[in-house]
Length: 338
Image (tube, rainbow, N blue to C red; front, side, top):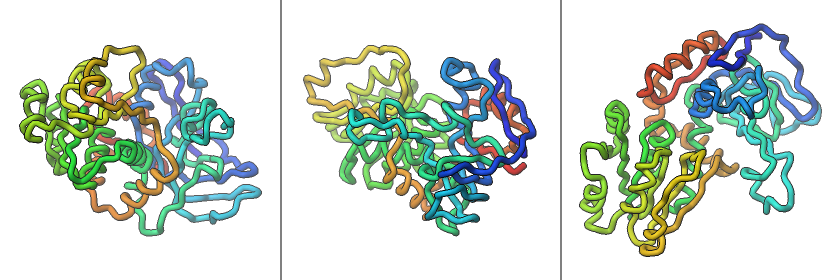
């Protein structure tokens, strides 16, 4: 079978390896599609070389069908369509308080262990979520990032009568906006990239460029002075941190979706003055995955438009180079059987 390997120094290779039987408690998946996410791009840039065991097959956004079943695995059958929730929480401890998805010793499959950018992939059966037969495997490859968005919106407790501002119109930001819009709330997307603004509008979202308008004034006018009930910080830049406390209204909730590797400056006075809440949001829980699967299966949201490129697995080096050269794209999928 073909498998891709990250070798460091912005280099991937495609190798031939034997198809391994699944171990006890595992299944073998014939991978249909594997999506490229921001974390994969960070790995490609060498930003996670201290964590990743080089050489490594990466990837965690995927869909496929069960090809073989290991000893002790029930509830699944060969031919089942599945996705993997790539969280290995076998190191959970009582001190984690039952929040296994963010337990102290959590291992992320596809980063801390081999991932989905290969033709066949052996994974623990407890990570699987079964899909309905009618679910598109192509769209199902969006389940993992969509579950992130579902988790974020669920934690925000966004209501239909409220206004939410999404700071950042990349793939996660637009998925957050789509899920948030489904609640019936008024959604505003703030994004500086004009091509991504165009994409957001194509998805039926209200999107503005904060370098061309006064976002604080715009939000105030859109809400008759009440400002945002919820702000999703997805951009991960200081400018977003500066504005998030300005556009949040009294007792507004700010969801920290972006990852900030270094300490940043935040206006804490605004938290005192307006009784704001800052909520951390990391990955997803089982219920978020099931909700994401239900959304993909129903396919009433414009998920197909989120997929901007599909490439054969053998083109992996070119795929990452193209993402570097075209930061406007949304979601690239690897066709793992090509």
